[in-house]
Image 1 (cartoon, one colour):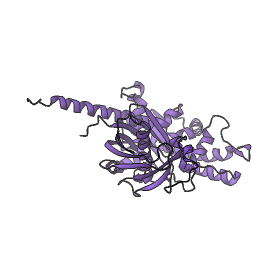
Image 2 (tube, one colour; image 1 turned 90 degrees about the vertical axis):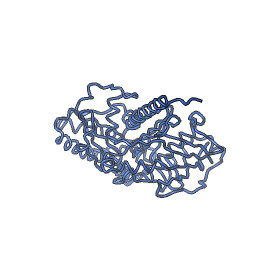
Image 3 (cartoon, helix red, strand yellow; image 1 turned 180 degrees about the vertical axis):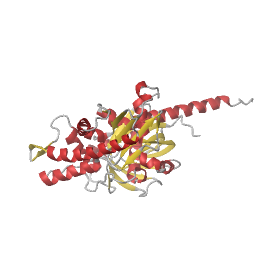
Image 4 (cartoon, helix red, strand yellow; image 1 turned 90 degrees about the horizontal axis):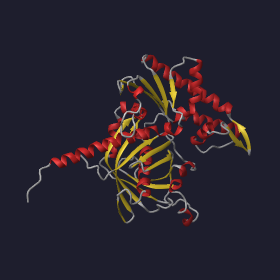
Length: 397
């Protein structure tokens, strides 16, 4: 068993839209768009002095060395910087999160940024321009991939190797390297994580007594997939739970495409589309040549179509689990589809459904749950190690 006392906790949700990560004793968090672009070593920068006045998150430019990657030693722009590239890649529908280099590049970037920004307070050793960082990681994969047994392969790729991130033309961190080692990696099914978050606080005390023994569905709508977890007797029923290759990414891509062909307006990424359909003021409006223009007709048609498909999934799973008491919609996709799903439900079957009104809570739900689970694991392991130490006989001199 690894000694976890000097290991920093990391809870990381590599979502299809963005990566959300929580570190240490809740002392820092990161949210970076899940977009990468292959790049060259010397990206053009106007003035190095100016570079160092910028936020590192706006200019993540790295080389990643890891035996876990198919493309080793490749150079990437990551996050905001990548959204501005012509060759930016976002995860494609049908791809497996556990098998994509992009998932690992995002994960390693987040950890390296954490190791850098908390310089000194993490207790990581630093010699010259190299930091040796040890993490205890809690993360997750879609239900479908866990059911296919891909979590074991993903975990073993991370454990037992050193993964290095070298910052190239990144503000403040240029020339720094971070060696990442994992003392322990726990991979949780995403649907189960949502349940943990619903019923337990950070110390895994039950906060929602009403829910704990109910039969619940949790429909987690992501970018590329939808997981429906079936909870009964305080556990996820693995046989009944289902994962579907249906998320909001394709719909967002269609909206982006149609706005381009109809209005001649080029949006950088799916994230820009989400911004247009969820913003508080001027929702579903864009600027065309400086004048405010509605794109309601486009967004309504495409999102209603997706909401109908999501509703069909709910209906099918509910039919097979007829004693279900409530379904919670979670994840970034449910924020985008909330109004359409509510309208459909009111006009059709009238299931008992609920949404998280707090958008931040819905988006950070997985990362929060992984944090609760991995902190609890770390606490138990450390206490057990301490107890074992105390039991050891003291040698006489």
